[in-house]
Amino acid sequence: MWIVVSDKAGDNAQIEAVVERLPWPVEYRRLTFKKAFRKGKPPFFASLYHVDKSQSDTLAAPWPDVVVTIGRRPAMAAMWIRRQSGNRTSVVLFGRPKRDLTNFALIVVSAQFRMPAAPNVVSIALPLMRIDRQRLARESAAWRDHFDARRRPLIAVLVGGATQPFVFDAASARELIGLARAYCGATGSLYVTTSRRTPPDAIAALRNEMRDGDVLYEWRADAKDNPYFGLLAHADAFVVTGDSMSMMTEVARLNRPLAIYPLRRSTVAERAERVLPRWLAAIPDYVKYRLLPKIGFAAFPRDLTQIHRQLFDDGIAVPAGSPLPRDTDGATDEIDRVVAAIVAVATRAT
Image (cartoon, rainbow, N blue to C red; front, top):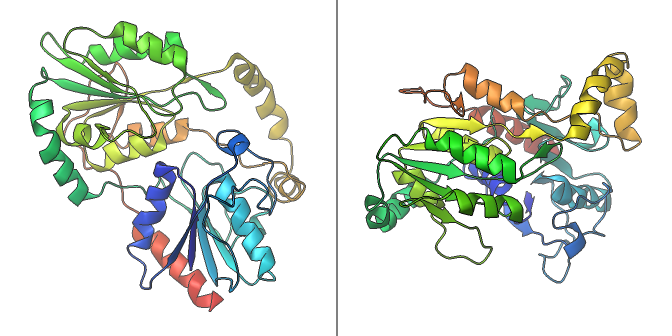
């Protein structure tokens, strides 16, 4: 079994949560992509045209029985591996597939993807990422003095960024801080962290909104002092932008008070959504879920608000600005069901 992944920590965390429960060893193949495709989404083909081979692990025979992967770019490489093996390799995909469902032995999708029921589809409520408890304990000790000096309650604001069709701009940043500050009371402070997707104008707006006692940590790829795990251990409550599945899920699995700031849709997306549902509903399921994927059109839309609603309905989170939840039971853990499905695929493949 090969695990084919990129450098996206949130994606990889889902795979790693499963790997540690598998009954056999695996081999990792870590990929780096050409500059043009590190953020931009390449057209989906079973190919390595987007891979920076000089910076990536080698993909060569003997080909594996099973590949487990996540995300568009690694999935393209996984499908290329399958082709090189004469379609003998079974591919397990986490997330929404591109092209035909039947290309994959197993598809694991969480609530933000609208997928049809199928024998090879396992639907789960939340992504499977979780926090390494041993690392959390180490980081808690390392950051204790730093966070003990902060004014309480300490509200962690975890900021993602724009992702189609959602917008996160300077106005959004100012609104986010205003909603988060309401949780501080008269004595508290904010600790704001950005991500690699946070746009410069939003970062500038966040910086301008900081007050005495607040902290803004600006994400850097090579940073050794990222406070994220320290915040998970020491913050009193969390406000997370609704684009980040990984941050929302990790806070939810720690059973910490969580408020979600849903990003607004772009003007173009809002206009399209008023029109699209009417004619999409009229398209037969066979065309939407079988024919359109075969010719390269994604027929499995993503709706991040489904995850928000799941967390709200379960009492695990609230919309930013609402009173924070208390004493929740935490997020449902479905990892055993996913592991069993992957073991079944591997057993058939060998």
